[in-house]
Amino acid sequence: PIITYTQDDGTVRRVDAAAGLTVMEVALQQGVSGIAADCGGALSCATCHVYVAPDWFDRLVPASEDELAMLEFTFDPQPNSRLSCQIEIVPALDGLEVAVPARQF
Ligand code: FES
Image 1 (cartoon, rainbow, N blue to C red):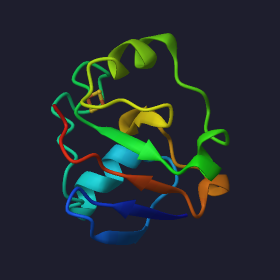
Image 2: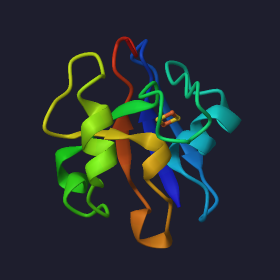
Image 3: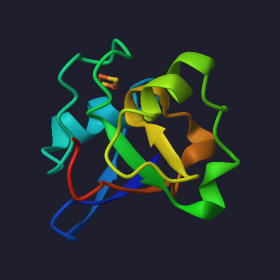
Image 4: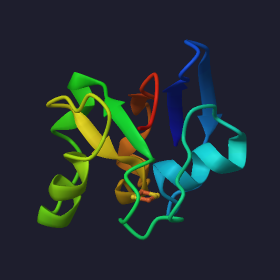
């Protein structure tokens, strides 16, 4: 699936992502700027915050209670905020667009 990331510097990156990985893992692999992911996907750092394009937000598996709790610790959370380590890439997400916030904390 093709995932489009808008980096923290505004640069748009389109990457061909492998299904089964998370949006965070692909961002790190591809060197997308602005995602720290300090905890490596353990849902304990909230430094993998992204904003999901509104068209796509409702098509994702909803955030768990634990993810919602962690999102409160992010810089400038918005209704379309997600933690990218909790978004697993599946074929149906071809075309997904996310934006990296200006800062992670
Ligand atoms: Fe730490 Fe997502 S990588 S919460």
